[in-house]
Image (cartoon, rainbow, N blue to C red):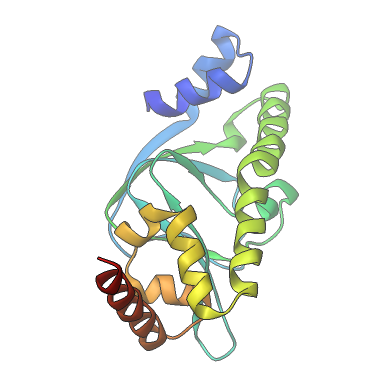
Length: 194
């Protein structure tokens, strides 16, 4: 729990009373692989800080296909940021990809001035952390599949190391078989250059 408090203290001027109110409203929770934190279509007033583990954000198409839109690895916030701030139903499901520990901050237990501070923090967080990820994602999926993977590999190598191939393929909007061919091609190119 100390990680989220330290992080918030660096971003916000918190009085000792506000800090204690945040501590009192935090619940630690362990989620197992595939456990869902937020379901698509539900409104959530909870914000979680990921102590360790990994999550994916995805939406489900009318055909029932899951399309990954973002990955969250340790030491980041977990929520559908835009819809959380707008207090609208989530456009994505957020699910653990590995056993994870989160600290859930329940806003309904906080006073309005502290909620306003956290709201301001949330908008800044979206601008500084989420918008760059969204822009990267738009650039990545605009490219041909081979370049999509190369860009992802260069910008987010931890994704390649930690995230299952089927989720990477979905994120890149390609089939897993295509991703396997791309990885094999890269391996062959690396062997030629050695």
